[in-house]
Length: 114
Image (tube, rainbow, N blue to C red; front, side):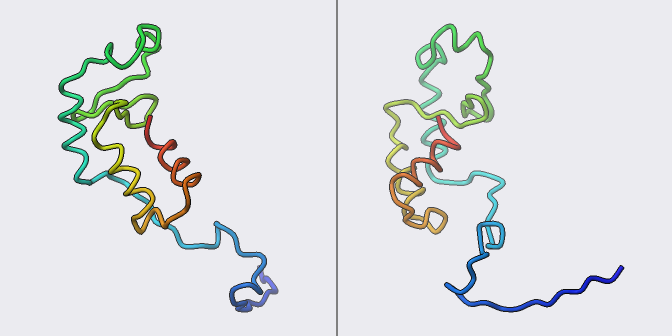
């Protein structure tokens, strides 16, 4: 079952074949942040009918886990939440955010929050 191949190192710009699959990545499996208790407290003072229409609630896509609301597996933040600014800063300024610009930051936030 012999394969005939060789491995060559190509630095930086010379390596045109490099893509996101060849890069190291970090996977987050749990959320731990200072804004979670704040969000949990905000949600304690709300009811789902305050934030969603009756039709949306009948769809059944809202789940509540450990005081947090998830809509279709995305963490829900109320429109007037105090944590929104903190989330923007974490997703843009942190090592994970990497100053990716507003479009990439928005895309990352939209993938996880509603």
